[in-house]
Length: 338
Image (cartoon, rainbow, N blue to C red; front, side, top):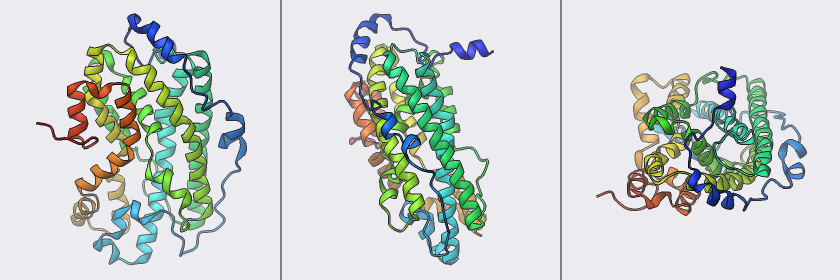
């Protein structure tokens, strides 16, 4: 069992005819991690400490959690709004811990151990160990901040111990892929999650309404992810040319689903949070659907995913007609499917 796990690769296809071209492409290595010892937050930044939690504090930008402005929630009063924003911060921190632990670290470890199934240069594999360290630190400081927040506010995390929604979404993608390509969604999900720019990482560090410790914690994460962004963009350049055209055609239409697996709101967690503050089960669907209308979700996902979509375009993924149609149908690029 352990030997089998140790030998398992992310990409189980063999494309020896492209190995020479791919090795040449891989030699153009980014130096994003070159000054890691000086720049990584785990090396240079202190533990972020929440010193107090006043009743007037805003713990998460309300415009990024639209349920708090729904009329049925507003009429419950400002304390309910505050509780929901605290729960949203809990969910973000827990999502970060789960994402790093379940999705990014396992992929980075396989790259570092030369088990990606791709001819990745030695230095890039060594850099993957640094990403493992970064992501473990992000998981640790997120978990630590959850504990601090619970102590300071006296409000428990409603969704503690729950499964992040991306897990089930990735399971469905895994089952839908041709059996010989199953596992590639792990690498592609890591590429997507590390190369798109979420509104949380971009907006929270500069939001003066939030406690400084929250802003600093998210800034630490965002600065590290900037380097990971460059690294995983390079990994995508290694991966896509390594696939045969039939493999590209089989995988490509699933790329929008992988983007949505990461960016789609977690409606189940939102519903639990709403029930915890007194929203009746007969009102849940109304609050959730009116807070996240389809047009809004599609627009926000397209905006956040624009860099990842650009990188898929650069490597030629959207040259395949069915893949391009899938991106259009998902609202990730302009154009209607005829």
